[in-house]
Image 1 (cartoon, rainbow, N blue to C red):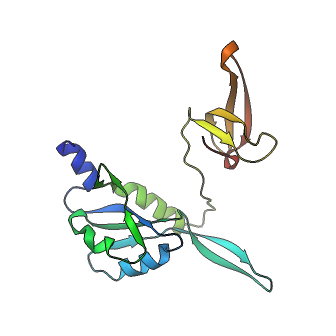
Image 2: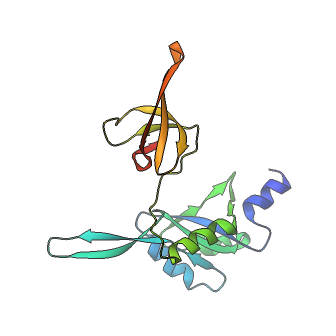
Length: 176
């Protein structure tokens, strides 16, 4: 790993944001433990969802990114984070903790603090192969051409060099 790559992955020597991989349904426990540590800033973006039981309905805050919590700390002090109950690890590249651009965290923070409606969605890149998960095209595989509220897919027959495009709800596709 070059020095430049190492600097990008580990942060610039001071506190950087990192994604903390947590055990299933332990995101809030990890957040609460990390928030008690003076050298760590913690951020757990949530989304309110209605839960229904037999006798009542209640709106509950669920993690926006299940299995992950974000923390800002000096990468040299990662043992402080790794010792917390419920932490599986720190998302890393080539064995080094991978720093997250502070602008990405700030953007998510501003969104969850706003009054705008938001929903999690799969991270899909245009040009990637995707599979339709719901609706009449369930199970069909195509190439994602455009992504917005609707996803434009191209279904092709490579052998004859022909294709057809179709729009489906963006929430109904996942990476293949």
